[in-house]
Length: 57
Image (cartoon, rainbow, N blue to C red):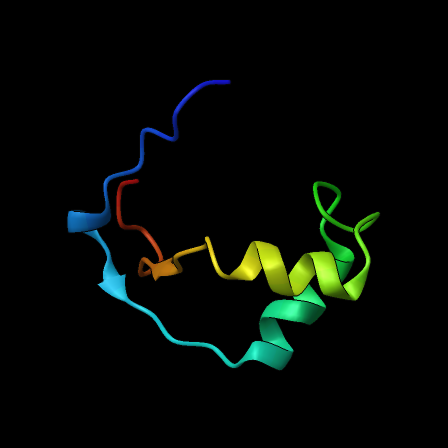
């Protein structure tokens, strides 16, 4: 599996609620087949970052 080339140091820290993260994972093609418990377990390993419109990633 390829590593994600996006660098964390070029993003602004971003916070979103657990409810929002669970909704996103439930809709994502990569994670929508997981059950809610699996989403919560996966969430423990995720980091969220945000970029402004037009910022290079």
